[in-house]
Image (cartoon, rainbow, N blue to C red; front, side, top):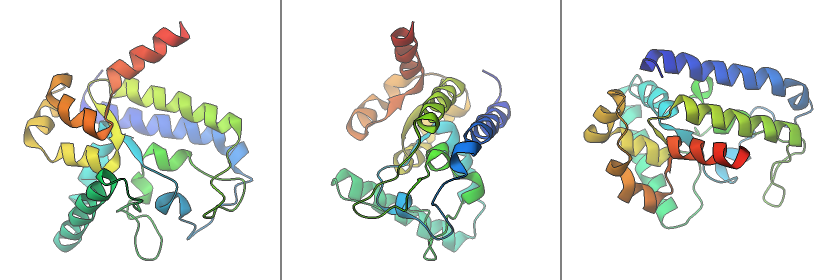
Length: 202
């Protein structure tokens, strides 16, 4: 499927294609600067390993003190989620802005709302954008076919594990290496997910 750099370029192409196709529908979005309900209350932020690698590289370029604080926040997010507690995105800053907005994953790019969100009003998306988003997720999983999908904190945790990181960067496909962690943390194996969808659609 090409080198990691080629895959990263492919990642941006999927983002760009989605944004171009979704733009007419998102023009009516109620979202605005400082609106962060999706980052705090709307559920988990699921990413692919490839997206995690991009985010990890971004985190590693931050000042050392910010890296330490962020890694503590990611660890706390994992614990809260394992306890089935609500947890805001660790990448959300105090001013309700995203720390990595330019490099944010697709889960954040696809979400918007036609109405203002709140505790009793979750995001309202058009069916067309939902369908475009589902198609983009299939493309992301096919692009990252030796990787996995799961909540942001879990994927970043896996990428901090040398044995997993080395295997992934080498382009090797060893799903058995994450089976135990994957089952208990809702990790999806991209290659199997893609095959499952192909069988359903065929």
